[in-house]
Image 1 (cartoon, helix red, strand yellow):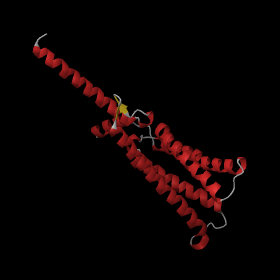
Image 2 (spheres, rainbow, N blue to C red):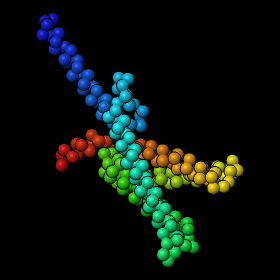
Image 3 (cartoon, rainbow, N blue to C red):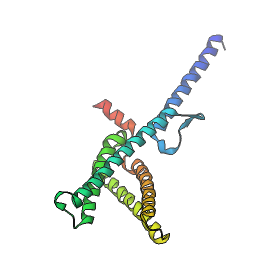
Image 4 (tube, rainbow, N blue to C red):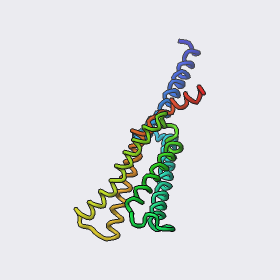
Length: 195
């Protein structure tokens, strides 16, 4: 082996390592729920930042949906004309439905825009199902607190509701990533290149 060959071998190995690192980085950006934010024992800051930005967008959309839900509910129940003042459950169903649609649009076109599929109707149906389950979680924590633990009062009710909302938020995020927004960024990039 000549001296020139010896200098080429490390350079080729460095290029192979760089390709592996780029592929690993792409995989980490694609799968933040896998818990793999490290490459070679080092924290992958790019993957962590991408996941944190996605979480910030997810929480912002959730906050907007919460405002829509609470705002419409109060408007229908207590607003001008008391449109549904005598039907609080109907007002709640309408407000939750609109808030779910606002949430779906925000998550589809902003939070998970790189992962949306071309099957919007399927996404909306699965999204709705996950939100129904997510809505039942705070009801369940409140019922558990009230009827199993026999804790009543404003503090106990609010603590159990906040715990339920936090658990439902985690459930929704995982559900959206696993079953709703399942398109890949590679497919989206290939589609963008062909158009």
